[in-house]
Amino acid sequence: MDDLSPVFGKVADVVVCGFAMIVGRFLAWAQGVSAGERAEGASALARAYLYADLLDDDRRDAAVVLTTLLDDGSPVVRRALSEAFASAEDAPHHIIVALANDQSDVSAPVLGRSPLLSDADLIDCAAVGDAFAQSAIALRPNLSAAVAAALAEVGAREALISLAVNGGADLPEFSMRRMIERFGDDGEMREALLSRPYLPPTLRADLVTATARALSAFVTACEWMSGERAERATREAREKATIMISADTGARTQNGPLALVRHLRKCGQLTAGLVLRSLLSGHRALFEAALAELSGLPPERVAGHVRAYRHSGFAAVYARAKLPAGLFPAFQAALEAAEELGAPMGDGAEAALSRTMIERVLTACSAFGSAEIGQLMALLRRFQAEAAREEARVMSAQLAEREEQSRKAMVIEIDFESLEAELLEAA
Image (cartoon, rainbow, N blue to C red):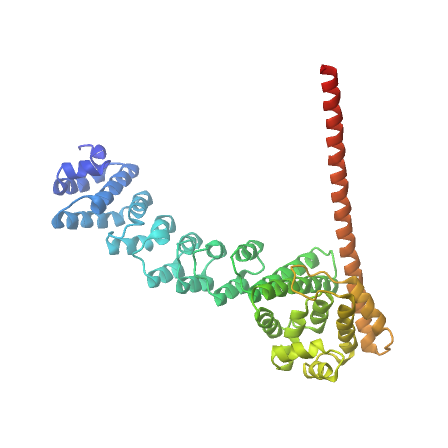
């Protein structure tokens, strides 16, 4: 049998030799050669179909031969077809669909790039494909929201990580939330979602919750902490992160904190402790949004009452919000301390508690003797300890930086003295 490898190695040779004859000889030649040689021939025939100036009859014959190659027992041959046709708009549609439904190492090129596959085709392939095939779909440029939503429902972990890092994917918010529900305990998944630009604050809060849940489960399983202590530690870390999200959101959009608060309330995370922490951290936006959400009053009206916190209107808004009555003195004292100390009460990126404000609130609340105030005092003491530790970390970092700068200055001085000595000696 003639060796047709050189013939099928170049598209130009296919055209020169007469396409009808080549197609006929190809079928006979393919019976006695290796899978690698058949793959090279299939690739050449596919390129000829796409780029050679063929007559209609020749193109039809070539399509028939290419279709028969879908039954080749070697995936190497079918993979060669998939790679040759992956980005082609003029490829035979039935061949693309067949390749898309082949085993994943064959289907991946067309699933990842073929413009001939509709959203319905891709959703169907995602439903029956393995993680490799689903990942190829997830990484398609300009992936539609419909396909992304389908992947979020049925995709494997690896596929959803690929989807999350695909900046060209139209990934709806509800699909990202579904991904968190399914794989929120996976660190790589959370990291991939956090890498997406302009992630909605409600989703960032969900990711924080998922991280806290995973961390609590880990330290409890390792018996590093009791369940109660781990729950408290992760709750406080989650609240601090939530305040940072609110601050960042408030700097971007005017209604961002209100949407976040509404989501926190729905999830059962809008607690009096979180609201008080936000106020003691200098983030009044979250505090005002919480009052507006819980009271049902317009945010502008709530903000006016907060500014006039000494008047009865603020007490009425607080009562309407159904926050614990025993905590009212703490909120009023925090607002008074912020006013007297000139605290910025803005929307910076930090979420550190103000130790000075906490101490002022502790002093103001110590005059009350109810059981609820006792619980409040315990909470404020924990806030005070957290603020003191944070101040110590900041001061330690500043001292270390000054020490490093002093060390560098000494090295420069020593080097200068050495250079001066060398110059004098040379002179």
